[in-house]
Image 1 (cartoon, one colour):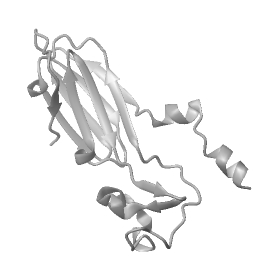
Image 2 (tube, one colour):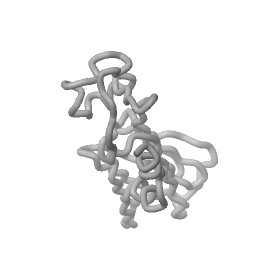
Image 3 (cartoon, helix red, strand yellow):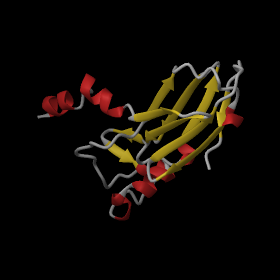
Image 4 (cartoon, helix red, strand yellow):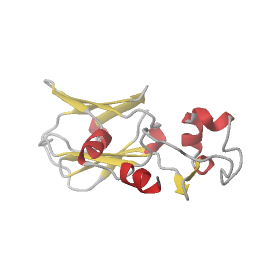
Length: 155
C-alpha cells in the first residue's frame, strides 16, 4: 500500500504544468497589462523583480512537512488559509493530524517573462495589486533598459 502511495506522490509533467500560474499579457498603447492567477497567496508571499527587461514573479507559501505530518503552524499565512486549522494543528508540531491526500499546492513558484519589455526602466514604472487570488500589474512603457535588479511593492 505504501508503494502505491509513494508512486502517486511523484510529480508528473502534467502536475508541474498545473503549478505554473496562468497569465494573460496585454500590449496597450502606453503600458503592458499582466494578469496572473495566484490563488492562495498573500501579497507578502509574492516578490516581483525586474532585471534587464525581464520581469520575474516569485510566490512562496511553503509549509514544513515531516514524516507525512503537516506542520501548518510554522507558516501563519498557510494556517490562516487552511480550513482545518480549527480542527487540528493546534500544537506547534501538529502531532494530532496526518495529511492523507493533498491536491492544493504549497511551495514556491517562479515565472519569468522574457517578453522583450524594452520599455521597462525600473520598478517605479510598475503598479501592482493582488486581490482575490489575481495579480494585476500595469507596466508603463519607457524607452531605456535598467540593468540592475529591483523589486515591486504590491498595494
